[in-house]
Length: 183
Image 1 (tube, helix red, strand yellow):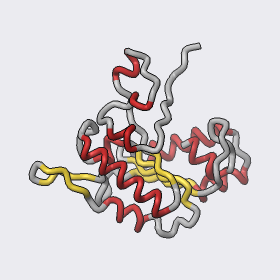
Image 2 (spheres, one colour; image 1 turned 90 degrees about the vertical axis):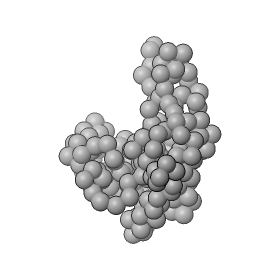
Image 3 (spheres, rainbow, N blue to C red; image 1 turned 90 degrees about the horizontal axis):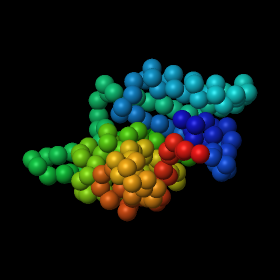
């Protein structure tokens, strides 16, 4: 949500410049009311001006997919075989009129995968679909995912900190690990 606000307003994100534009956040985890409330908290915490708040209203689209029909994952299990769904094409259709799309967020990997996140085929299809969407729409895709237990126990801080399949880090452009810091 903070990244989306930064894209909307042109503010930097974690000290890095971002291109102004639209962000679409799709959640298979949270209700619309919770997403709207969380965005409102982020907007308030950022201390935005009225003109910046207007930019957020226009450029940040947050949608809960809970209870909606249609494809919600990049894969499905058909007779014991992992197959690709039409989610990529549904996303392309749904965003066709978003002319300044900078970022698509698919929250979370577990929900958009359509199968176990430790399954190599499932994760390759998830990341492959996200990569194709990014290339077609000239934007980038963020897929939040949980870290593994080893990350905490062994203080793992590299790209393999994510739980599940190695395909996550092997096929992603980069992995940004957000974590609590002990000073």
